[in-house]
Length: 374
Ligand SMILES: N[C@@H](CCC(=O)N[C@@H](CS)C(=O)NCC(=O)O)C(=O)O
Image (cartoon, rainbow, N blue to C red; front, side):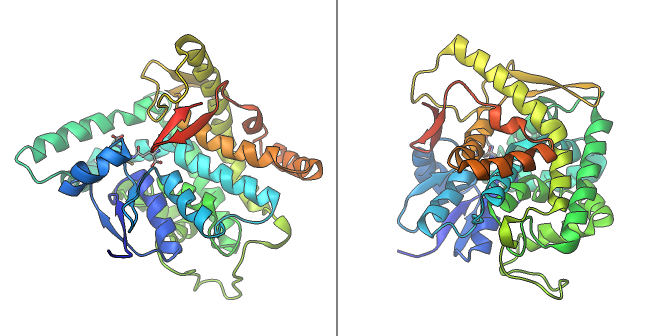
């Protein structure tokens, strides 16, 4: 038996970037294989239950499907090295994990799929070589790329609001860049769980596909460096001359990070409120049995509709957002009243108060590698 973990993942996959970065930053030895390897279908999929990446196989042969579950596996086993100690920082870290995983799909999909002249050859290479080596490889690649091309629409990008998606993303980049001027990570001198979540869209799509990569390198150099840094072992902070080693002291959440959240709140909060209403309606109508899978979107008809700067946006309402949001709400519920007041003030100052009250009528849990309705 080897002590090396196997990460089934692929370079251009959004969710893979989050788990890979966690393994790199925490010095966990691993090799990466694509799902095109025969072992994935034959040995891993029966235990992972869904063909999604990232999926991890431990040296003992345990299979863990889902990026959040992979990170939780290591966090729980090693004293939570990536959870900051203070309540405000813990809430912010868990919140960035949700936003990164589910709140930036519009810019990620828009900048990947709506610039074919710049991106298409690059994408074709990556989709082709993630396939099993069969004669139907090219046809399957074409099919997969065609399916994904429509992902932007499903997540709310339309001909009417493309400029708005770009405007908001440029504001995000500008706010992030100001933040990374003084600090190399979200909450100080080392990455927290929220850094890994945010990396998901910022690496494989926005920090790697040719069109958005150029934008980031030219207009948000410090953010680009953070993306690079998140994929390097060690701290990687040569440009900081008086670098610290830990999270910021006294549970500080810097004003520059609240400015980032102010931009993110503009669509994250109304979308979350609308998605909760939509999914709660679906729950009333469908009454899934306790233990039924909640791992996939409910269906193309289940769209959250909300207004963003005067435009109507319709985006898939996904239970997974609430699976991760439950963690933020759980941290809040466990706090002393005085700490709750501190968190309330902080969230109100950046337009994020709504995330605490947006809840589903049924809790979500995890069983046998699937998110399930409780
Ligand atoms: N909740 C999962 C989502 C993983 C996921 O959807 N990954 C994409 C690639 S970025 C995938 O495997 N898609 C194939 C599929 O959905 O069948 C996670 O965070 O790991």
